[in-house]
Length: 430
Image (tube, rainbow, N blue to C red; front, side, top):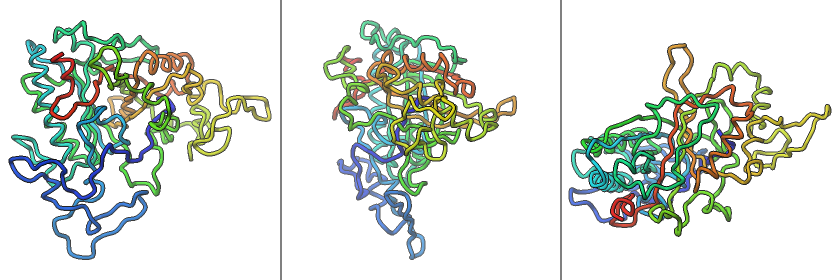
């Protein structure tokens, strides 16, 4: 849980604010977004900072799309969706293993189906056939669907020579308590949306498309704060109550692309403009954590709980003074504080773009919450991003007493598909 996460602001590649698809209408009829009409002031309207709420004075009719439902992310582009967008309210992470005998041909057919479905659903349209109608009343709701390949995918498809070196298995860490049944996988899909039914609809569509070609290996469900729930856009909080993600790299930084995406001239060529996703299910030992005083929690993290500011003073974005001492001569930010250890300047510049989800899967057999963080981080090379930071955390992070890594996966996520192409086409047809 590095001190790097996306602030919960909306940064779609392209937003449609009139509720009308810019693409040609599908043969089967109007899209849901066109049918429902324009997003306007007659329904529930959330202000840009989430502070203004208004209701229509007239009796309720077929509710127009709100600004939340109308927001659309484009499927086609330089990078796959679900990486650069802001945190969404609801998410599903799901891994598949290819069916026996599916091979390269079967994998290509599956990725072609998945890409077609993702494009339609992200545009607010129904599936091409057998749509469940779960999301028929909603707009796109910032839906994103992202696809990746695991280490084992390449052997199953006869493409071992195309497997990137960066996809070599992650080393073992002392904090690992990994469940192999909930780790890795041939294929990985990330689904995110600002509406729970829209996200579930996409999940079922992806599962149905995989029938006969791949079976589910594991699935995890997550959530974040809904856009507009706070008086102003702000960095998200995790289930420990901490502001989580102040130092996430920003696309405006000059070296952002170099750290997060494989260059267009990268090796292998099919990974151009892609990225690598490390996925970890991190259990938070909330009963133990919540017994600490707020002051003790702040010493573990190195930041104030109320506003995320460093213990050395200032606001959330004030640089942390790592050398500052108190009246006793002790460091104000302890040496083992999580925020100190995870700083890029304390890890040879290692940086990763964190885009996590919280999870709560009920109460386990010991009567404690099965809750925590679905950690997803993006980087151009995990050996220079995730691995050095996690190794340093292993050597003495104060937070390690209160978390447990229970599953892990590493996936190669190729660049975005161009119009008329599907994700991974350069690999599977190259």
